[in-house]
Image (tube, rainbow, N blue to C red; front, top):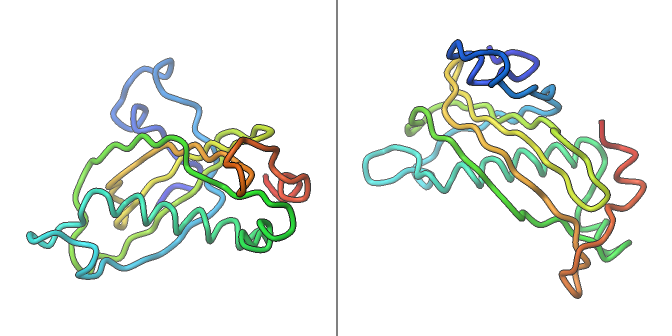
Amino acid sequence: MIPAPMQSTLALRGAPASMARDEPEVVHRLPLRVYWEDTDAGGIVFYANYLKFFERARTEWLRALGVQQQAMRERTGAIFVVTHTSMHYRAPARLDDALEVTVALRHTGRASLEVAQQAWRGGTLLVEGDVRIGCVDAATLRPCRIPADVLELLP
């Protein structure tokens, strides 16, 4: 079972507390299964597919909060785009593995969100990453404020 609050991997490895980041609480968990389409020729999940897994988890988190992204675009002209990712691959996932992908909100800004995400197989941390999401005007792709009604729904 994955701990309710995310634990820093530095803390898990016994690093000094001063090096471990203060990890945010998990706000969403998405179970998923590894299919052939997710793997390389060796039957191991292709590294870039974890970005897809993370995207699905973030999308389902927003949906669970009541944020329909297409409706937000139609109503406000705003869309979310990924502006930065940082991933650390720790162990492989394989065909048919049952995974759980977590989302933890690290920071909310006026025009961006920072989330910490992890992919787990049982109690084994496979991949962890930080993702920065910007809010932009769909027509111009220039930064804009996250709609107030969306900000109100965020923890």
